[in-house]
Amino acid sequence: MRVHASTDIAVTPARLFDYVTTLEHVKRWQPDVVETRSLTEGGCRVGARWRATVEEPRRGRFEVETWVIAMAANEHIVCGFDEPTSSGQIEYRMTSVGPGTRVQATAELRIKGFARWFSLAAKGFVRRKFESRLRLLREAVELEQHLQH
Image 1 (cartoon, rainbow, N blue to C red):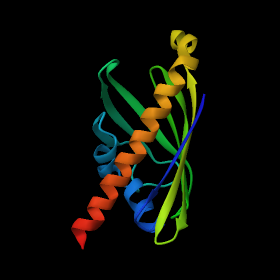
Image 2: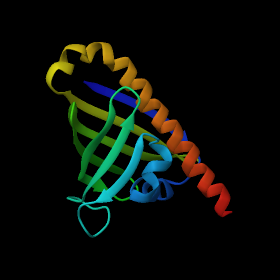
Image 3: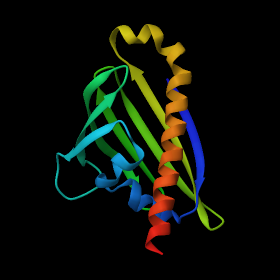
Image 4: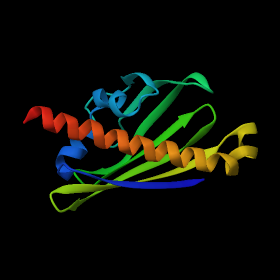
């Protein structure tokens, strides 16, 4: 399943990239994330791994392991992930648009097990959730920028 969403954010690509690649910020724009823990040292870099504890109303509590596949500072980051019902990768691509940044996010999901039978029905839900996370990202990073000025 492939899902795509985009939004414009009123910060520079460098500011957005720094925000997205800081593990401590994840809970601010991913409200289902209860806790994050780094599994590697050295910050966000290709090969870095972390685990998040996620709690969703319908699915309960579960673990998601994530790792950086590729990245170019201030331009894009591609992360792989694995959790109980799906695995795949997510790419965030950032481009300058006027004084801000357009972030284009693309997710490739592989549904596991019994849930595969419902993947077509779930695509709309997944897309809406993906879009809502980009809105939350925009709100969080713009608020932080506003508070620092």
